[in-house]
Every structure is written in structure tokens, then in C-alpha cells.
Length: 151
Image 1 (cartoon, helix red, strand yellow):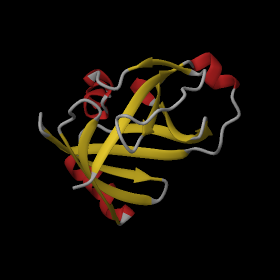
Image 2 (cartoon, helix red, strand yellow):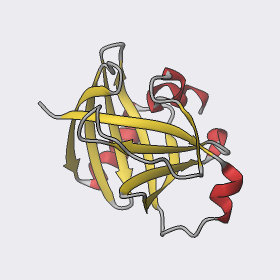
Image 3 (tube, helix red, strand yellow):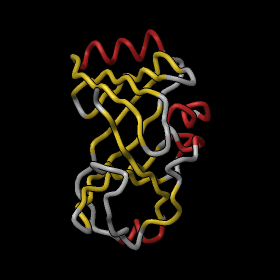
């Protein structure tokens, strides 16, 4: 089974604005199914489609299965099977020996900036960059499947 162990943090917008950043990847995603135990997400990242199934989050851990799909199929699934979608720009920031995925949300979620860090174990040590603020890893209000309801 594929397992994801992920931290999620809010980002200080003032410090983020001052940083040099790599080119972002544009992400559009919607949810085909959501329940307390599982979500099924379709995502377009640049010009590649992905279908992802994620299990229930337990602490920082959850099962995750992700498969590439043709971008045309992903576009059609979003159009046919979702009524809301999230649009964001993802920046991969290499800092403190880790790759931080920083998502800058657009639309009704504009102003929200989240940084995610995947680790190999819950015991893994890491140093947070100074632009990281509050840990929201276990706050369901910051899960994309919940955020999409604000779109």
C-alpha cells in the first residue's frame, strides 16, 4: 500500500512575497467522490492529468494512490463530474534539505498560501524555514476536499 506522511503549514504572505521563487506549476483539481473514509480527486498539473485516491487521514498518515491519465480525460472528468474546482500555483522550494510544495490559491481561496512537506516517517526531523507559520497538518479545514466547498 502507498502511504503519504505529510505536514501542512500556513505561509507568512509578507515573507513569501519577498522570496525568490521558481516557476510554478498550475494545478486545477476537482473531487469525483468524497466521504469520511476516502476521496477521489482528478487533477491537471500543467499539461498532465492525474487520478488520485486518498484514504482517511490518521494523524499525519494516509493511504494514497496516484495514476497519470491523459489530460483530455482529466479535463472531461472535471467538466462532467465536478461542480467546483480548486485552482492554485505550486512552487517547489528547496530549503533546509527538503523540497517544500508551496500552494498559492486563486479565486475564492485567494490569499491562502499553504506549504506541504512529505516525509518518510513521522519521526523524521526537519527544520522549518522562517516563512512557515502555523502547523495545520491535522486541521481538516485545510484539506483540499474541505477547501473546495468555499469555491
